[in-house]
Image (cartoon, rainbow, N blue to C red; front, side, top):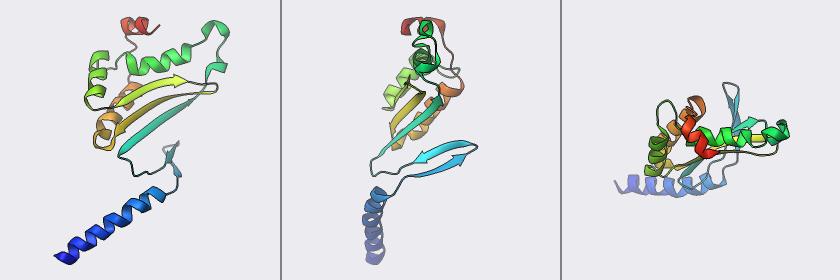
Length: 141
């Protein structure tokens, strides 16, 4: 029994430094490039990038991409009302939001590992099933 416990302890001591020094890898999942970088932190950060950016819009539409990406996470989804979405992210310590830059936009999610499944559910709902609730959208403007 002592040998098993000692073996498990040695394995844990080996895994932590190994995980910290692991290099970044990338791979494709159904044509979507995934970049994976392991850390010893107990957090998960996900960003979904979109080609585009503020330079793709005329001056009279400035900010529309930022508004749309913010609305994904602020206006609710088919599964969650705006308030339920915010309450769920607060309850599980999940930070989720969207914005745009010069030549790209992204939606991001940050959660602790323990609540990754709930964070992933919120992120995929926001991207795949946004509701763009009119009253919530008007508040963002």
